[in-house]
Length: 108
Image (tube, rainbow, N blue to C red; front, side, top):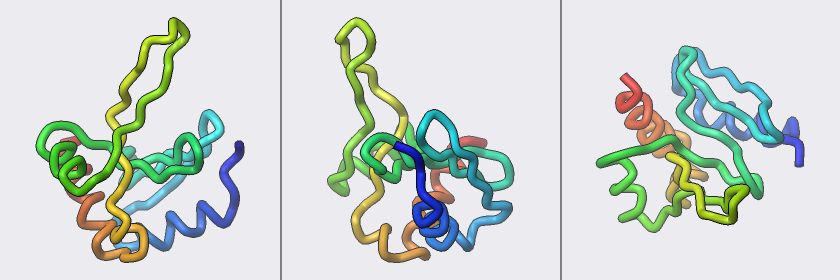
């Protein structure tokens, strides 16, 4: 399923406080970047997913967020380093950007 213009507008509004915000359609989803660094995607089932590992991933899990997994070609589960955002962050640009900044700091 292709990403809609409305989804792109939502992402741009949600993360508007981040510098150099850009998006790029890819593989039926959307890559979301700040100053050229990817920190989130719109992935399967139109889920907005934040890139996270280590402590950030644990904090997201503690918030009840779920990690992106899918069945690979062999039927074996594949785990991606992307997590859903807390529900509260989907309605609060300040909260969403706080999580996004943590993801970006991890990328450095």
